[in-house]
Image 1 (tube, helix red, strand yellow):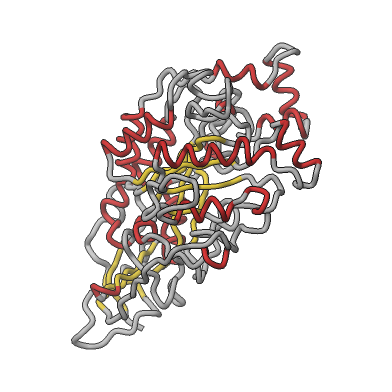
Image 2 (image 1 turned 120 degrees about the vertical axis):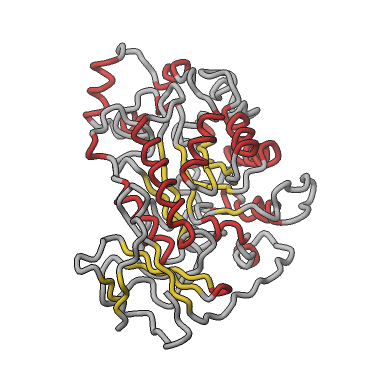
Length: 433
């Protein structure tokens, strides 16, 4: 096993974690395939090659923002926990802080976004080193962050901010950064009467997707051209209820009957949450579950969507300092995820006023500082034949086959001053360090 002397490079430019070490090795180059026309079947859609930019990006930012940011208590599932499950802490919170006749809809006007500055957000995201961003255009509460024609009086243009949040952020991201712009969209809505009526028919009726969900998805794509479309919230309904394959066929193809040309067909990526049973089975890339980090190589491209706040996706006023992951923990997540072939989608929750709290901003900037030093071992890398080392723990590998490079990222500085690696097989005269 080769013993590699401790290099004299700083371990992460002031954030104290991780070091990228590269070894020159001969590796085969990947090949690319051309995409055919796609039919509205999973067999056809799953054969679409994932646009290359997504695997090269490695790191993105998730933004959970909506009316749930007003109570900002417990979880972005506040409405459900309070009204449906009637969890006592949520019931007590409302009883102690709001009038007895206060409804969830009354939070709408309080979602002001008065300090929301899309340019400031864009600059913070650029500084984080992320390569794409995904905004919750609509969560399960049904409130849309754009002036949806199909969400009358329950959208950010008619209520609360009276601004097109999606448009403002899209423009700022595309004008000020090199990030790709993406949108999250919840297929179902907890308390929408049409969805509830469809559900009571065991989804034999399809009123909700026909009149609400499908028109909004087409509207989002045609109006804002997202290059990530992050579906979620199937509500227990199968993909045929949502007509997921029909929509994706339009999204991936040049043309689809009676529908305009999709503006992002060549670059858009989609996930796997398009109906009950589709997760980790169908779609562009797999998410499998929230905070999914298998720790081993998967045969399909995947993403680890996770939160800086360990317990919530939305902003929580009742979060304590120990509820937030440290930069060391976040870098560990990034390194492990990328070494196993995944992307990291790291979530923040802005306040109802539209500010990114200092702890979220600090974590984003710290990640950017680390990536400025070590990004060569993250961006545009491939997995290697070994994901982690068998001799020294907390050593993870990535590679760049075209350059004959292998990177060993170690998260703990060797106490002996030497790093022992069991996986690389050095060849005298041809391996460089």
